[in-house]
Length: 470
Image 1 (spheres, rainbow, N blue to C red):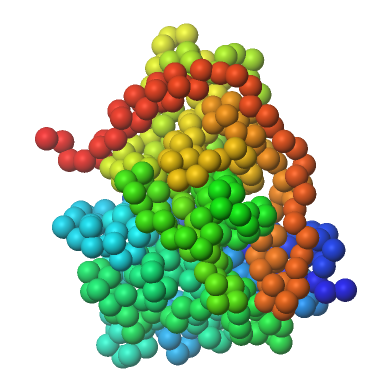
Image 2 (tube, one colour):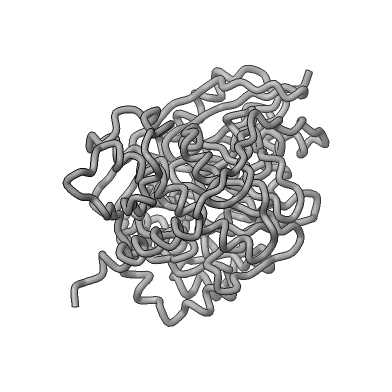
């Protein structure tokens, strides 16, 4: 029986999922890695720790037919092109150190959007790579010696595991350096950000020949959110999923049609490229979902995420209590990196449970803003969800009620890894069965317009907080 292995290297952990050809899936490895907060605006990972975790995953996975790799997306670093030695920490997608650089490029916003499909934001890789070129002496020395490689984490992992650096088109589409129409690195974008194109890895289709790891073919490499989109079984225009992980990321498939932002704050992105055919999606992200839950635990607002599963009171937003999860700015559809996390509406009678309830509602309401924008492109009646935060029954019901959509909870928790395994199977001409739904949460009547209007007031108050005072 064929067995496919997914290596899911995420923001907080590395996981390995074995999937047999009949669709039976089991986690065989899981390890968290350290998060380094070197300042209020910095988030880093140790690249050697990540590689070590991937090697550990491979060592316990046993014999497999093929491997698929999913990666963090916008997180990036520099390494030596010849020996693969990391020259910098991984600068994580949440990192905001490049906000000043981005502000200085404001007059290029229209050009960057037209070429890459992306707004100017510290979220994407381009400015992070430029920052390394300017501030890291090891990176400068490697460039002078002609040994510098710059890129997202997937390319670094591939060099270390297979001996050949490469990235796939879905990951490249998240850098702001790839031309969204051609699917290749763009010389104008590289010049705008100051990233030498010759230091970037080649761009390959999502499914193809990525080399071998100890003799086993790696047949797929993909961004985590696109892997989850595939794992959710989204194959038809309008199919939509939200992964509630560290952030909450919604993707809605647009098929072979590339839809550039029509002013709704959504991002065009490559869903996957298979067999010479490229599929696209619209994307919207909430930068802090699980990250907001983790923060609440660190400060003592929450002891266990299971406290977010049910509440006896009416919705906090209906009682005027709101939380805006803008701990690293506001992503889609606002794109305000100067926004700050915000609790508002508390009185002397507000309880700890009220604030917990507002916390989980805030994540759902931000996701709803993105779904509302996606609905301007195509009708959406069903949303498939996964990720740790989606284990909150309250979140799923609140999201269903407020969007008016059925919320589908799949029977497989690890949809990102499952999608990567499915794509790896496609690389060998095989097809793994789709993930069956475990539960469908149907919407209950509510005054969603009032909820969204009240939340919109809170979002407006969160915007611009980190701008210099007038």
